[in-house]
Length: 424
Image (cartoon, rainbow, N blue to C red; front, side, top):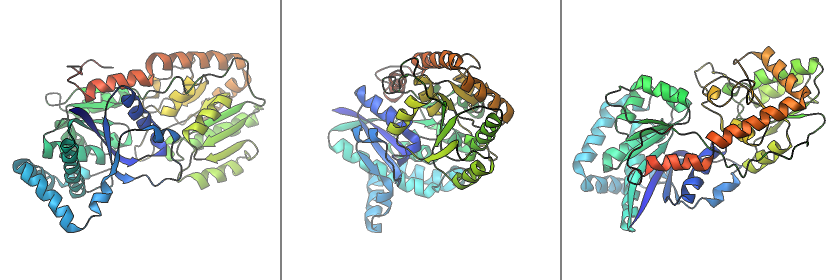
């Protein structure tokens, strides 16, 4: 009998969540057998090329909710007959805790319960095929973790989840505590998140909280040969065009750098609700000939662009609604590519970047310092080389995808590694 790990995600495959696809592929290389359950389809025009290499079957739970009511009722009856006490207990828990889905999220508690019932039914199909389910793991602390927690209540299976950024910070603390109370372990990508989780969860009932960095493929992201460069230097930035990425600050900093005589071309990969506002800002700041909003791009295109750039800049901040990054994966990818980075200390970035050691880091919103830092790198190839080499070493030491997959495997399949405490 083979073992299978259930992976629950909000949508699959999301262009902005390449780190989940990479994680799945790395776990599969280690021999884990996964089954992916996505609450909804991503419905995006661009799909990352590495998605085609994922072996795990993908099922969309929204399809089960679209079935005729008699078929959905049969699914509830089957789950009830398999474990009446668990079904009643889980149902009562949902009915008596209407705030479970408060804050960031799109599913009501009852909808999450329906998703969980459908998933438990699919797990029975997995068992009927001669496999066992060893863990239910949810990516993101909002809707997916709520579904995962209810699956655990309905089935008795082991449950873990990964919390990232907004999904952790923008659900009520009581909701996070409810999810964590049923979890065997809680994973997150940076120590800043772990500190927040540990402050919210009661120490006497909290599961182990483990920091597992999002790793990158060190073979895929490689520095270009020494001595190669462009004239004028190319500055690259990548991210969704949303407030927390701080692109308005980046544009203002670039305008200051240009006014001070810096020569450069800048490409910004990404799309989002601020596209038109940022496009107007580029024109207003007189950057039309220097800055291009290049739209959403696949990971292959990002890899290629990193190989042709001279400087990478990402200037996150804490948004007005409290949204913020943990450690943006694209920063790790840029450093793995040997690029010097200019960034801010928002979220968990200070765990990755040390100022003037392996990059340049500014306080969030400090446009003047950002401009000075960008100008300094544009003017000094030697500093670019030194910081880029140091950044690559940082990623090699602490952000290798294979190391991250090994640590996560210890969480997902604890019978192979009897303890999960002590991971970092």
